[in-house]
Length: 305
Ligand code: NCD
Image (cartoon, rainbow, N blue to C red):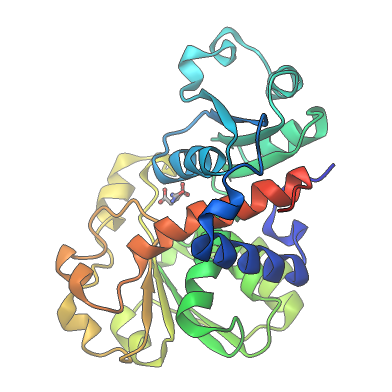
C-alpha cells in the first residue's frame, strides 16, 4: 500500500507517468469516468482549504467515485481529543483513500503509519504539500515541455511556504535547475531545505531580497502568500505581508515567455491587473491540480483504464 507524504515518495519516472495520465485525462475525460466506481475518498481537513479539498473531491467524482468529507476539525471527534492516529484507523474503515490536511508538521506521516488505506498529505503545517507540487509540475510541463534547464525564482514566504519546500524537492532531481530565492531576511528558506535538498543535490541557488533584480533571469516566477497563520505575532506579519507585489510594470522586466505561478490563495502579492498577462498561469495551475489528483488517486489505488 502506497501513501504520498513527501514529493520524494514519487520517483521521477512516477512523476512522468502521472503527467502522462493527467494529459490523457484532459484529452479523453470519458475514458476515466468509471475507473473509481464504488471507491470512496475521505477528505479530512483540519485547516482551511478551497482548491485542494474541492479539487480532490472533484477528482474523485470525475473518476466515478464517492467522497466523504470532514471539512472542519471543530465538528469532528478531534475536538473531543481524538488523536490523528486513531482518526486515521477509523476513517480507514469507511474509505479507500484519505486526503488529509493538518496544521502540525508530520501529522500526515502519523496518519499514514496508522491507516490501512493510502494517505495523501494535503499539507502538513509549514512542512510540505506534495499534491500542490503535482499541480505546479503539470503547469510547468504544459508551458515548457520539460523539467530541466530552468531558472526558477521563488518569492515571498519561503520559510513557512510548504508549497515552496515541496517544489524545490521535486525540481532538484532534474538537470540544469537553478533557483533564485527571493525573500525578506526573516522569511528565508529554512536551513534544512537548503542543506538536505539544495546542497545535497548540488543545485545552484542565490538568495536576494530584490524581485526586480531577479526577474530578468527567470523562466518561472513562483509567488507565494505570507503565511499569516504560522506567525507567532501579528506585528511581524503586518510588517512583512506586502514585501512583494508583482505588477504589470515590474513584469515588463521579465522574459516574454516567463511563467508566473502561485499556489493561491493570493492576498496582495500579485496585482489583479497581472491576470490579463499571458504569462499569468496561476488559474490554469489550479485547474491542473484536479487532473494530477485524478492521476494520483488512480496510481495509489492501483487502478488503470
Ligand atoms: C497553499 C497551502 O495550503 O499551502 N494553498 C493551496 O493548497 N493551494 C498555499 C497557501 O495557502 O498560501
